[in-house]
Amino acid sequence: MATSKLQALWNHPAGPKTIHFWAPTFKWGISIANIADFQKPPETLSYPQQIVITGTGLVWSRYSTVITPKNWNLFSVSLGMAVTGIYQLTRKIKHDYSSESNPIVAKE
Image (cartoon, rainbow, N blue to C red; front, side):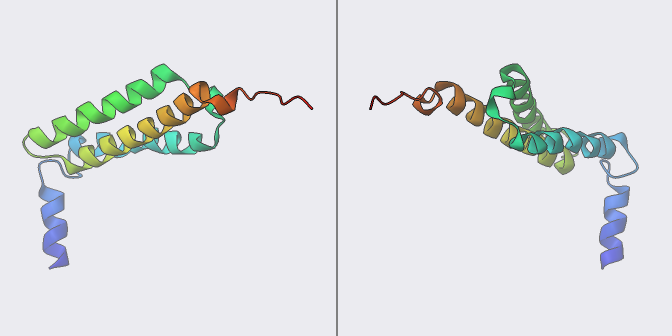
């Protein structure tokens, strides 16, 4: 049973014998780098970079579901990119526009 599933994966049109498997697999590096940036202070984040990461993730996750054959590896990495991009944008917006970032000094 397990061998038949592995054989089906191996022979899939978007399987490991094709670029349709390896390109999204290496694209995980972008999502992993974005996750590593969760520790960075929000003021060092870039709006253009995070907007592109989010937009790319959303566009390609949609595309991966309408092509034939469906590429679930591309879908998962693109969704991961969109989620990490949205999280980073949220951090940056909260930092730049929240009242806590500009504290009022209390008079004694």
